[in-house]
Image 1 (cartoon, helix red, strand yellow):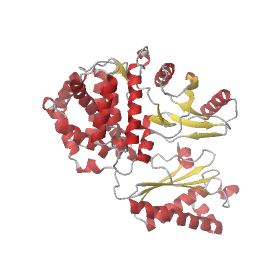
Image 2 (cartoon, one colour):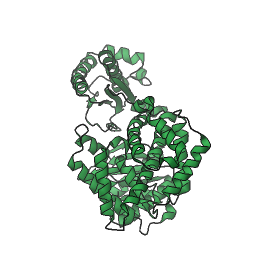
Image 3 (cartoon, rainbow, N blue to C red):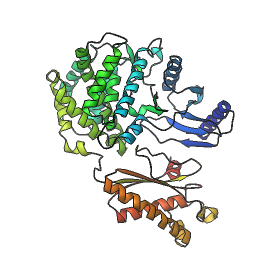
Length: 478
């Protein structure tokens, strides 16, 4: 984001809030190319958004205004500047349904309280689909007005080119294309005249005061009711047990009957087909982000998606009509490499980050929460001296500087002692992720050196995976 865009967002916030902004913190990147910034003053907080895609911005803003007028739980848009590709919206906090789910689940159990929250979410979903679709200007949809044959082909080709081909799964091109059209013909038999949210999954549902709120609906369009339910219940990393999914499917159909007649048998048959295309779309996204863009954390969702696919292939009853497609899907489920890709099942991952307090403390994107934030600002700062101004904590000159500073050695010994206890406990209990942050004034010398030293210490003393990130230095490289 350009500096003038930051200035415009700050001006927008201060104009809305009537107070000076005290912090401006970029949130971790998600699966989109939008940039989110939490802006806080003394009393108020808001989310500043930058997105270079004007049509996507128009869709989000149009939908937000419409849904708000219908009383749906979406963020209020406070201000917008389409020419600068920015807008200011309500801050709904950091707790997604995915994080809420991870915090409430002891192992594989799925508590009743969590199932009840999913039922609340389903009630809201039906409101979006029925009430939210009434009077909506579908001309603002982006990239298409409906989840039609063209949209479905895009998703299926996404799966073919970014998952099957990159994962080296064999198939006959023409036969697969024929099966795609057979699948689409069946999908389009379902009633597809309602609002389709498009990405209705646990990371786009926020938990605010024990109620679900909703974000990232800018890809919405006209389509079938089954698609969004499939997105929610077959959300790969949410890992909802089969019996709970069935309970929630039945609950959805019973609630839907308050608004329209439902042929349950036919609804379920179409639902299975929409589950299938949704899983394929998601796996295409994992392949694009993981195999193609080399973003490893997207690969970690693949084994969960395969588990869902295994169950679906065993229960779906129209496999014979699409032999090439289902042969390729069966090959995916039988791949030992794909079933374990991106998964360090027995190994704890420690994420170590250096940062500047000017930008705020990094957010834990693992969904685990917890960990440590160590403040390095009490340590003698080489940044005060001109000869170190263009150096970082990875340069020999700075390393030598800290080698002569007893307070840095004492600080790191204290850090090791504290982190040791968590690493040992996390490993013994089978936990998968621990986050450790080091902050200083500029994120250049003390925090970088400390992060590097902890990385070396952990790799020397424990069998763990370490992910190291220097926030300020990485941003300077862009």
